Amino acid sequence: MAGTASGFRPRRTSIGAEGVSHGAQNATDNPERTPVPPRAPSRNSITGSMCGLIKRIEQAFRNIPRGEVGIREAAAMDARLYEGGLHEDKKRYAQSRAADIEENWQEIPDEVLAADNAVFTYLDDAGFKFIMPAIMRWSSKPVTVDKNHVAEFFAMRLLPESRKADKPEAMVQKWRLSKEQIVVIAEWLENYLSRHSRCPSALEVAQFERWKELAHRA
Image (cartoon, rainbow, N blue to C red; front, side):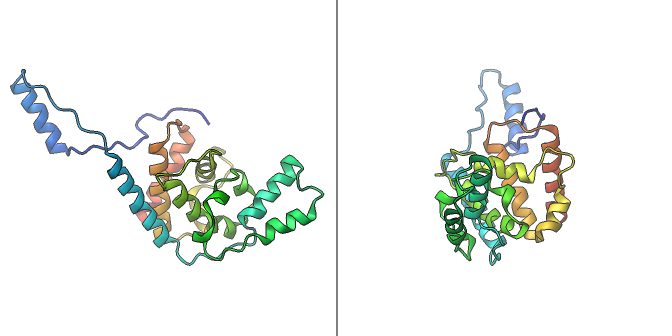
């Protein structure tokens, strides 16, 4: 996933347009005065922003029904296909399926969300929508350490680089997303992409801009 996109990352500053202009004018009028650069957002402000996003995720995705395939069963499908670990072990596969007992996505343990970055491929549409808010909330927690790059693979599902893949409009229809959910997804994508060093491709940027358009239209 390579490529660069100039101006893609949102910039934050604690100084408004008028304040910046005023500071520049003072520096010109008084050459001996050294302009004070804007301070980076504090850890508390970043944490507060993430907490606000988490609350909006929980509100937008309340009462989401589970799908036919759960996250543990999807992980078992991945293991059976790529590792061969469950190819002949029907008992272990059945145990994985039976372990998906959560009726509320907020009850899915963090360690389950963090375990496998390939589960998204094996989920049915309802199953994907069910774990979507769980992944967004988990990855937005300041204490989360995403060793398996689960959030990145999740973002790839929302910003596919293949031109043959579903566009955001089709995803909205497929997952039956509400206006509030579209807005939250666009906000999560913006936060995720601004906090990670990976440079998005031009196609990913276009997909992200489309999510933002859909959110503004909502």
